Amino acid sequence: MSVSIKNLHRQQIDDALDQFRPLVSRRPPSRGWAREIRRALGITETQLGRRLGLAQSSVAELEASEAQGTASLNSLRRLAEALDGDLVYAIVPRRPLAEMLRSRVEQFARGRVKRVSHTMRLEDQPIPQESLDRQTQALIRELMEKPPRRIWD
Image (cartoon, rainbow, N blue to C red; front, side):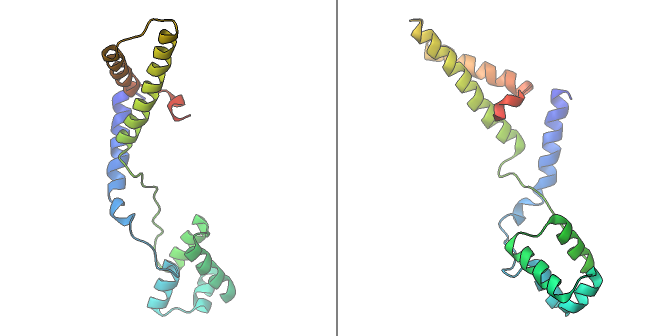
């Protein structure tokens, strides 16, 4: 994939995730969304169990696991469907993807230049800080064009 396509792809993902960012700070009800929705609709655990093909006790366990954050996505999907709803799922990065990448590239580039600079100092050939800064910025630009996979190691 070319650089501009990768940048475009990152931007499109960020744009798609923007709609979820306001929801990140929203916390689900303490007893879980499924139970709250079921109760608001006046559906009993037994009735929901029939829709899911489960016993009432299994519905109670499923609702409890949702509230505890241990329910599987498949179980939540089935539960949402039984409540005539949809499961909405997203991983929302705390910062834009390009910003996250740039930060990691900068860290990687500084480390690489620092190692070379250290070697040069050991050989009694110190490099002026201004030159190190230029080299670091040049390396950042190069790595932003084609970031190596190992920057995340």
